[in-house]
Length: 258
Image 1 (cartoon, one colour):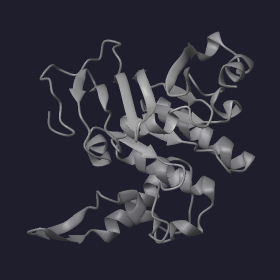
Image 2 (tube, helix red, strand yellow; image 1 turned 30 degrees about the horizontal axis):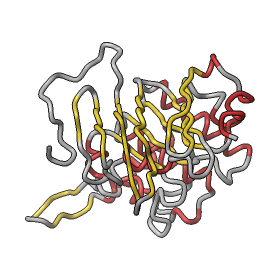
Image 3 (cartoon, one colour; image 1 turned 45 degrees about the horizontal axis):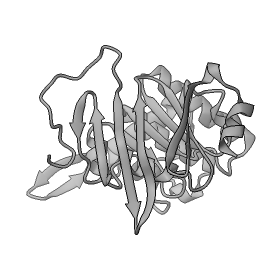
Image 4 (spheres, helix red, strand yellow; image 1 turned 90 degrees about the vertical axis):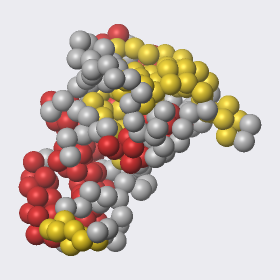
């Protein structure tokens, strides 16, 4: 298998089969069994809450799903085809975006550059070199922000001048612009105000309406529960529960986690 490529020529499935699957995933770090035979699947246009205490295996799982790490055992499938990710870029090429809690963007760079980072449009190219299409990045980045009802003053504003909620909005605008299929959000409401938290939760619901599947990783059940379709609970590297939101309560989930 080559990284980021499909290993089957079968057509993508649209008959209710999972959009993405991890099958019997294992990961070791220096003798520590961080992920123990986890099965994980995503449907189309759904929000899956991934919850668990510190050390539960959440970060390890999303690093595998996003291409940051490879599993030591198990398989990954996307749209019915087996895949292998050698890097996050391989996952991005299939439409899988990840917003990490601390490094979603480059703070010193502008809004426009962050939206197009790694996928910058060029006016023309000579060999390996190209001239960036700066006017296009400026124009389309602001349109992408308006599409998520985020009105910022300039595409040249450095990201480190934005609030936490505005930064999340920029990353979500980027995902929508590039027609992401799966959005992985790592603690997206951590350290946000109530107003900004509600804004982020609204964006996740809007992504679902646009056909984007989201994995929402959080310690705060009160944030993910209202918008989740399903919840998956990890503990000590194992999946200990998977349930439809309508079949459980916050209190029952809390008992599982603690």
